[in-house]
Image (cartoon, protein in one colour):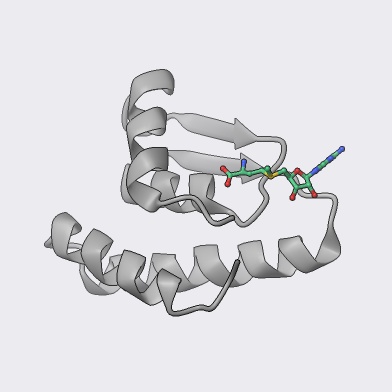
Length: 92
Ligand SMILES: C[S@@+](CC[C@H](N)C(=O)[O-])C[C@H]1O[C@@H](n2cnc3c(N)ncnc32)[C@H](O)[C@@H]1O
């Protein structure tokens, strides 16, 4: 299951260091934690043992970084756009 970005943003804000900090997710799965970190200005390090999931992680996080660059003056618009696009990915 792909977790909603809003939930991971909430958890990153609650449990991680302030802007500029680093978050480590040792079990990336589909990479939602990494995307939340991009939005919230945390550096992100992730591990994923499954090669297929790792390919998904790279595609999702890179895709969102480009979207974030494009919409960097409007974070909320970015989040809505990305979440919509994510559900169109057709993942579980
Ligand atoms: C439930 S998912 C993680 C979800 C993710 N943290 C998120 O926020 O969406 C668990 C993932 O951990 C990966 N995994 C299991 N054992 C691992 C290991 N030893 N090293 C790295 N990844 C591992 C699995 O392949 C699976 O994709």
